[in-house]
Image 1 (tube, helix red, strand yellow):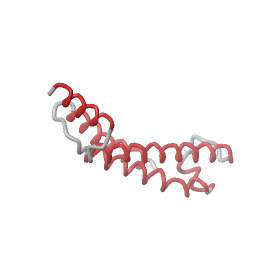
Image 2: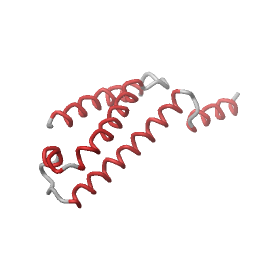
Image 3: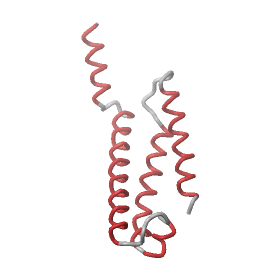
Length: 114
């Protein structure tokens, strides 16, 4: 089960590299960031069911006690991760389709100076 965090770190590194490149080459299509958050969303959803079972819980989270409090804590963290990933994917969608607030402000500024 140690491969899950390792794979997620590698996937997120692609997103970080893309974000650094976006400083010099502006685009509204953050492909790797989009993939990264889709993978994070899928991983959080996939970890919900094994978290509920004692045998897989101890393998996934050996640093936590196998108690209901621990399971509830992990489920809350997974739910927050799902919500944040979904929110970021929604914002990336809006950016890709030029519907975000920042794009609207840029257009208003361009109209004001022209």
